[in-house]
Amino acid sequence: MPYLKLSAACLAYGHVPLLDHVDFQLDPGERIALIGRNGTGKSSLLAALAAGSGLDDGEVWVQPGIHIGYVPQEPPFEPEQSVFQAVVSGMGETSALLAEYHDISHRMSASGAGHDALLARLDHLQHELERRGAWSHEAQAERVIARFGLDPEAAVGSLSGGQKKRLALARALAHEPEVLLLDEPTNHLDIAAIEWLETLLIDSGMTLLFITHDRFFLDRVCTRIVELDRGKLMSYPGSFGQYQQRKEAQLHEEGLAAARADKLLKEEEIWIRKGVEARRTRAVFRVQRLDRLRAERQARRERMGKVQLQLDAGDKSGKLVVELDRVGKSWGEKPVVVDFSARIQRGDKIGLIGPNGAGKTTLLRLILGELPPDAGHVRQGTKMEIAYFDQFRAKLDPEATLADVISPGSDWVEVGGARKHVISYLGDFLFAPERARSPVSSLSGGERNRLLLARLFARPANVLVLDEPTNDLDIETLELLEELLQNYDGTLFLVSHDRRFLDNVVTQTIAAEGDGRWREYAGGYSDWAACQTQRPPPASEKIRSRPAARTASKPKTDKLSWKEQRELEALPERIAALEAEQGELTRRLEDPAIYQRDPQAARQAAERLAAIDDEQMALLERWEALETRAGGG
Image (cartoon, rainbow, N blue to C red; front, side):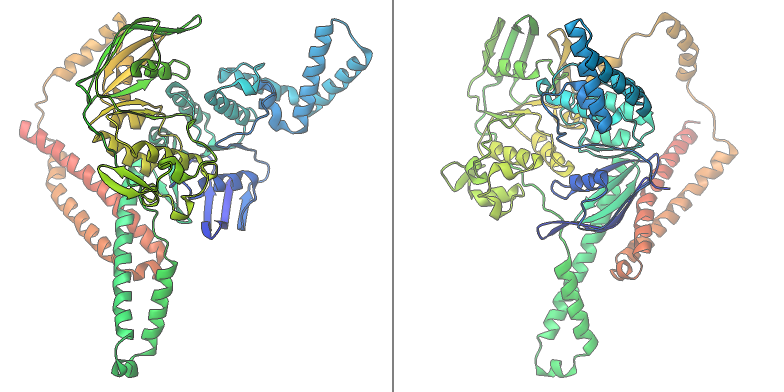
């Protein structure tokens, strides 16, 4: 029996349907990633499932008796609450009784004397909490708080963004829900915390539905991907890599079908406008088909466009960008940078890795000359034009319009030597013309990040500093940003907890080693992680590994067995059969009628087409392996 079920769900924002009669089911044990472009309605869908309501039409069904934990993107907390109070606050009336019990206990211990009224109230509260089984919940809350490394007495208002995200997760997990709904759980968490959360979610066996744009997290945690695209939900079992292959094939087929439909509509429009003779002889069914084609074309929702990213590196900086010689910096008694030396040259792409609070932003400011070192020397290069992406969007005036943010006092921007109207430039970043005069305060988190990128790229810069640029950006925009930065001719400094983004962009990594120590590594996150795991094994392990090493080093001279020889001979025929099946399926999917006549068959054909690619690759790899052995024998 499913835990959650959506039936014919409809939800609209203005005239745009976010959910258009969609069905969805979450079964026990599933870990589903909900993905889609910014603004498609993913968070609205998650909130509707958490509340069991909030749809314009349709039904949300929740299995009776199950408990759902929900962590929204920006969890609401009372700043004056303690961490413990915030964690137990989800218990309803019980949480108020617990808070009163602890308050009275604290007052009595502080006064050093008992009070009859307080003692009586404390006794009543204790019996009531025992009746409700609240003590086990309290113990669970304390365990979760300790597991997340939080101080139970700390005020919520004093916590950082990462600590508040941990607190929200702790509050959800403290009640041991059967289903956990997570909206961008990795935002504001550092890499170590993200990896810990991945392991926790996988090992818990909990049923999950989560929104994320972290492809590393997505690949490791999810068992199925559900994409929200143009009001429809589409399911893709398997990993993110498998989803990408199937999605590409689906979009290709969709494009072919749309092109054929547009061609037919164009031909019929020409026919209907022919002279008197044609009008006398035209068939009624053809006129009816034309009306249907017009209606289908009008109802078709085009896929959201891509962000048009363009970055002007301007004039080249000097070959040396910055040189740090035994630099040190402390905040009070806490050392943030200790005895660090590095030489950064034009064209380097540097990633900064470290836990929250390690001092990544401080090190960046030292490198850029914004902060004087306490010890050592920083030598700046020449002709540096720096553009800085602010992690907390502090430079965005919430009352300013989008156009004013991009080009204050002017309707034009110059990008790459070309002059462009500010409304057209905003359109490149998927902002509709009517939103150009809207205030910044009306934007979502992902839209604010896009606006910051638009402002950043509107002026030339040969040194680019990006502090957490990936938060709230959808996967497609992330991949476009990656490609842009890979081709960027200037020098890049990147602070990010997105491991895939670091791997795809940076050429060097500066990582925090603890106690203010920093070290430089070649490559991205995976190269740094590999260095951390490369430790010499204990002597006992070396001894045990020697026989295996001798066996592995011995060259293989075995010939193929009779069974393997027959398998090798049959492989070309099997591959040819798959190619024939692939061609037949492709021809079937090129017929637009199949999508109307039998959409289930079309979906099955598309899934089989995607599976054939995997089968062909496996057979080709097997063929190569057998051929190599046969040749070597």
